[in-house]
Length: 118
Image 1 (tube, helix red, strand yellow):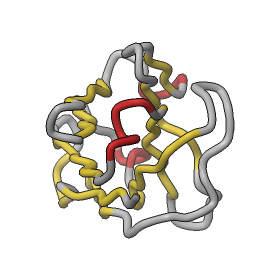
Image 2 (spheres, one colour):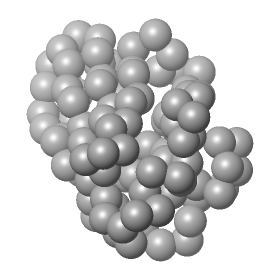
Image 3 (cartoon, rainbow, N blue to C red):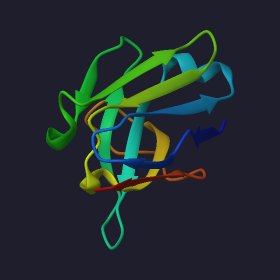
Image 4 (tube, rainbow, N blue to C red):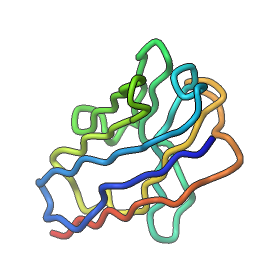
């Protein structure tokens, strides 16, 4: 089972982007999913997550600006990024998580670059 992130791009501060994470396999619907971000020179960090009950959690700096959702029928998780800031710049990855407050799986797919300029 693999996850693939897409939808990144270069935008100005204050603008929006929508990222997609597509999956395969029947387990997609039952798994907790997370969006992670790796900024230049920093470790990868969790940005948002959603479990199979649609319960969500967000990193403090993105609350009120980012929205995570999922469509299990089509095996897609979406991250809507609004009111982007320069500090949101980084490579965004999606991955399965063991639990909503747990760790991600060990294997990572290709991320998608988000660049926000002032």
